[in-house]
Image 1 (tube, rainbow, N blue to C red):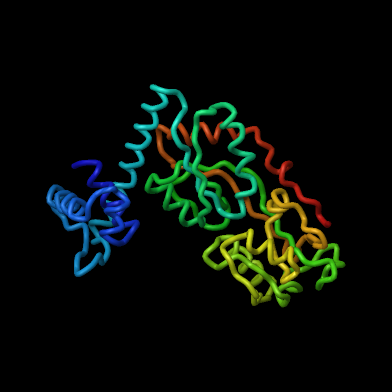
Image 2 (image 1 turned 120 degrees about the vertical axis):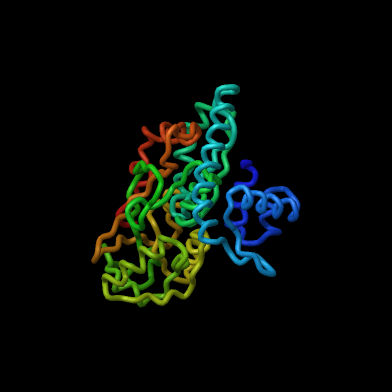
Amino acid sequence: MLVQQLTYLSALARERHFGRAADACHVTQPTLSAGLRRLEEELGVPLVRRGRRYEGLTAEGERILAWAHRLLADVEGLRADVRVMRDGLVGRLRIGAIPTSLPIVSLLTAPLLRAHPDLDLAVQSMTSRQIEEGLRDARLDVGLTYLDNEPLVGVRTRRLYEERYLYLVQRDGPHAGAAEVGWAEVAGERLCLLSPDMQHRRILDAVFRAARARPRPMLETNSITTLYAHVRDGLAAGVMPHTWLHLFGLPEGVRAIPLRDPLVRHAIGVVWPDRDPEPLLARAFVDSVRDVRVEEEVAAPARA
């Protein structure tokens, strides 16, 4: 059994298309298909349901895929260890970050880059589910995501800070004079919210339900920058995590009002694969953020 054959299986499950999987592996489609057939012959079970196009993995294929993810992650960890033994801490650290955590990424990477200036970074904005998948199939080294909302499987965690939620509205807008405002009160306003595929939005929807309210946003987006711009330009109000004021500040003429009834906070932290030996790049990143005081750095005023 070749590592390359397991790579083909992982790519096919991810891309769900023979041609795209071949492109991702930098081989021709016939080469990928032949490699998968050799893997099936060696294991003695069918792995892929084939028709005129890719139809998914068999039950045996799904089981083998889980093993493939573990083995490929171990192979990548082995290669990283060898690079470190040979060259010191070099290579590329691949970070997946939920959009609401992006403003604090540089706070976390700064100590690592100062200690290891030859290290490269690749930071991608991803949903929490994409981060979990990326860690599982070794496309990511670490992730920044929610720790306490939806189940996390197969990872180790370190808490960084608690995300708080603010109602951003023009100074002459609805509820702009309040010191605090309830979730039910803002639900009926013209809101910009993140799209439902984002865990942040699923958190907000659950809070609105708890407040017996249902928002009807005038804009949904997977980009907090887009949300922020619409609030800044007075086109709508928004519910945003406080960390984005650390990055952009409060736009002129806009107030940030804490939300209550209920008061909601969710932990965000670092996640990395739960295996031994730990991948060295992931371990180096986790160690480097130990003394970063994220809560203090991103603290936003209660009212502005």
